[in-house]
Length: 272
Image 1 (spheres, helix red, strand yellow):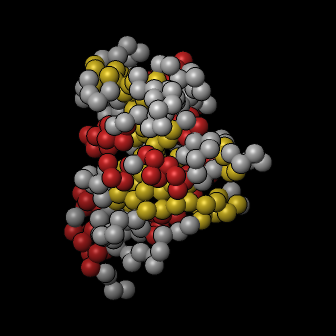
Image 2 (cartoon, helix red, strand yellow):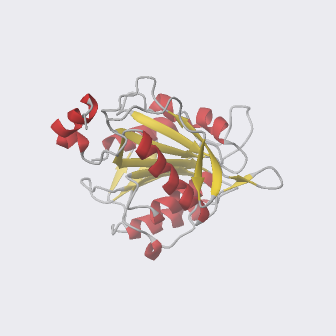
């Protein structure tokens, strides 16, 4: 069988190919998928592939999980991850859609949506050049709680997670592997109490085998306590913010704070 130039390149660069998926070296689909099959159901996804996509270059895969009321298209703009991460390693972004409820809201479920995560990873890895060692997940509100839970239950697959205003639906003894995590929470959040965020932090700290006392401090752009030594492969960053007025001037301490996307990008970029 004749080997493509891209496949040959991957063989010549083993350090680059480490973690590279089976889609590396193959021509990509004519358009990104809009659905995946997961647990016998068709689920919607919004996939953003770089205009200069190179099938010889393993790409990070970043998931953006929406909240209860905002669908994938809206949080893609709201999170601003693609602009914030544009200067880092080549990245493919995917925004799955949760199941819609009778009242028009959405909800993420465990274990059903673990199957969705797994299916997206497998499908995109087969069609695109994905670095399976650099899978990330981001979420806000209900999406944050799912991301924190995903970081526990799929810690053996994810390199890092970042969440804003989330809890967790798992215990440390349920966790598989460990994962680096950036957790942001407003002390005055009325929808997801800060104590729920602290529980998520404590579960992930315990799952990672880290000391329960903070070991350092990240001063900017948020005041973040670091759990784990400076050289830790999978630190936990616990960040409290005070921004509580949204763009319409309404008091809303449950908001996605200014600078969150830049902090997330910086955190992911420095992970070894």
